[in-house]
Image 1 (cartoon, rainbow, N blue to C red):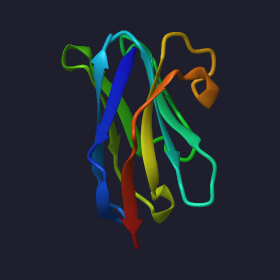
Image 2: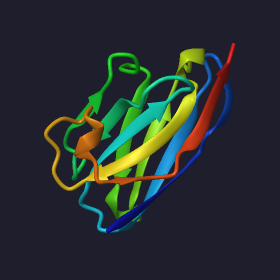
Image 3: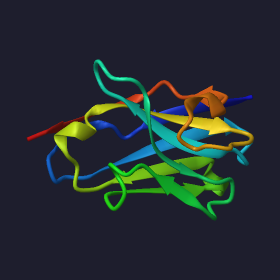
Image 4: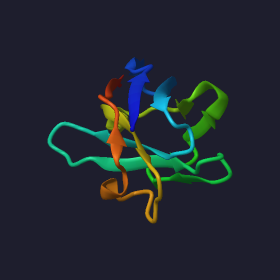
Length: 122
């Protein structure tokens, strides 16, 4: 079992930055992903990172702007979001899976955080 708690969301202007954190209680060797869900839209994958941080994955919409990282000693995964756009507005969730065949498939993940709101204004 693992519990995930996101933080770091808030209000930013277009072109600004935010850093999200996800602190895990429990084992630290999970494949971790970030998803987001905007009003009226389905949950979509944003980024993911392998258990030891050796590989990362990004959706086309955030590649070059967002960076995922992890510090297993602190049981924490981060999502650095730069050059934010209004279309980035959503509730952001971190998720964990023991094994993962497709980082963008929500069904691959077994555990989810409660979400943190990110709002980007123009």
